[in-house]
Image (cartoon, rainbow, N blue to C red; front, side, top):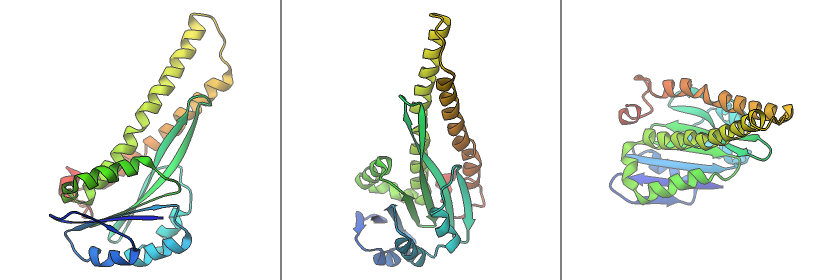
Length: 220
C-alpha cells in the first residue's frame, strides 16, 4: 500500500493516487514528495526502483532484515536503516520494527512491514502545517528520526522501573529474583544499545558539510 504526498512551495499538500504521477513532481526542484509504503511486494519495489532510479542492491536491502542502523550512500540518494522499538513489560521483551528510508534531493521514501502510527502522526502534522515542507527533505527526515529516538526513552524508563523493583525486593525484603528475569532485562538493554550506538555514526554522515542531499538548514 502506497501513501503519496507532494508539496509545491506556497501551495497546499497534494495527495497522489498513482505512483506514475510522481515523476512529474520529482522534476520540479521546489517540490517535495513523501512516499510511504506498507509491506510493499517485490513487484511494487520494482516500480519504486523504476520511478526513483534505485539501485537493485538497495531494493534487495529492503527484503533483508537488519538488526543495526546504517546509512548507505548511492549516487543521488541515501538508504537508511532505522528501527522503532516496542516493549512488553510483562515478558521483558523488546521487538524491533525496521524502518527503511530512501532520501533524495527532493523526496523521501519510507518502507516498513507493518503500519507505524508514529509516521501517520507526522504525516497528519505536516499536512496541517504544509509550510514545514519549505525546510526540505532534511527537516522531514529529522522529524522522523527524532520521533523514533524519542520512542526509546519511555522504554528505558520502564526497564529502569523494573530494575528498581528488583533492587527493592532483594535489599528490603530479601526476595530472590529469578536469574531468568534479570537475564531478560539485560538482553533488552543490550538490544537497545545495539540499535542506539550506531545512530551516532548515522547522524555524523547525515550532518557532514559535504552532504549535498540534505538542505543546509537541516544539518545545522
